[in-house]
Image (cartoon, rainbow, N blue to C red; front, side):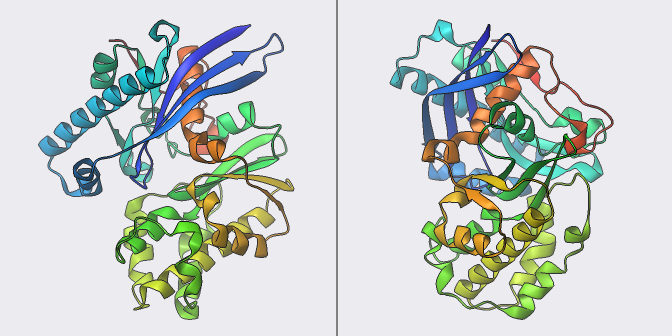
Length: 356
């Protein structure tokens, strides 16, 4: 029996805070992995940090370096507080696995950037860390995303046949003739939350705001005609693409409530079309969007597939669990990135290991 105890960290594009999980992983003699979540917590970013991260795209190199160091210290302090709060014996923790905060993601131009300085994290927490999971795959010609499908099929395959994460972007992973494939479908919370901030809200609770709007059919049609949606094979999205392509179209509708309603219909249409094109009848949905009742209702209206919404802990912390597991595979020098998913030259064991 092989076992690890890992602290997993995930900070997504919503910028609501840092997801932290304490997870035990075990591999049996047949090579099958299982996991158990001991504890989990969302540590909110303070308004100052949230503002700095939100404007990180426009920072100078020096300002970005300072932000990365400050964020790494924040991660380390959050880990220490988490360990104390849940009375976790420090000597039982093998390492911390941290995704970091994505600032730039342009794999077609050969780069991706996740900040949250790994050495700062390790020194402050006095624990080894595994960070920077995406850069190696981009160097190998891949998209550096999505990465969670490895965890989907090694940890969660007993729960569903395909997996959909509704985070900043929607990501779908599925099997095609026993080969795992995955791609980013469309933007979700990254654009919805941006619109909600314009009415003084951080997100649309259960879709209650957007459902009262009216679909702008011309905008809806133009969004669906974006060339990305005719692409095939491994592909991923970033905020840069949203700013250049989605924002100018959605701004043609003047009322915010109608913009949100139109975006919901666009999301449901694109995801429904993607689900209808894949093998597998049961879809496990996680991420913040899984709590948006109206969006789930519209999604169900666009597909006949079985939609499975799990318990709240798995909805909120699946990505943190997933990156903790990718850290385990990296620690063991096993492949944790699959070329069938990212489009890279080969499978790889990706991530930087740092010791305090």
